[in-house]
Image 1 (cartoon, rainbow, N blue to C red):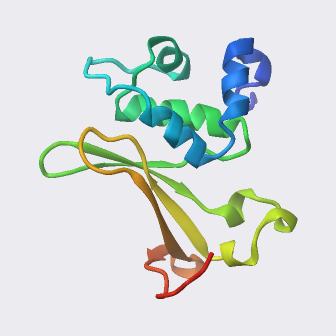
Image 2 (cartoon, rainbow, N blue to C red):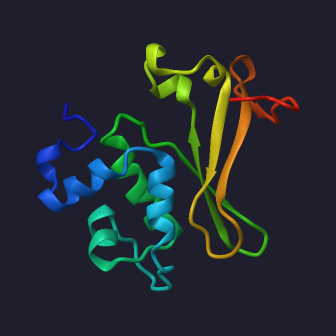
Length: 147
């Protein structure tokens, strides 16, 4: 059975340089925010986004998943469609899932970052939440929580 994550030799040297420069979800988000929104009816992969220099929501998800997989983050994204038909793409990052225990701050245990990725209209950014593992549920953090 082949591994699901492409090996590094599947990428060009320029693509590897970009992947190596974008090491965190926040770095990927900031990179994608510089791109204009792709209004075409396309579904470009990581390579297509890089070569065309623009992306719509789902293309941004594919780009981010490809980059972050190369750094050990399993691809985990959520696509919500609102009543007005607009998609909102969210990435879920739990440091306790990805960072080795020695590298993880104690406050990371039981928390998650909900990263609101590129969307057509409205703000993007990161919201820190409590993750209740026993219920597989997210909640607001207690007031005054310091991460």
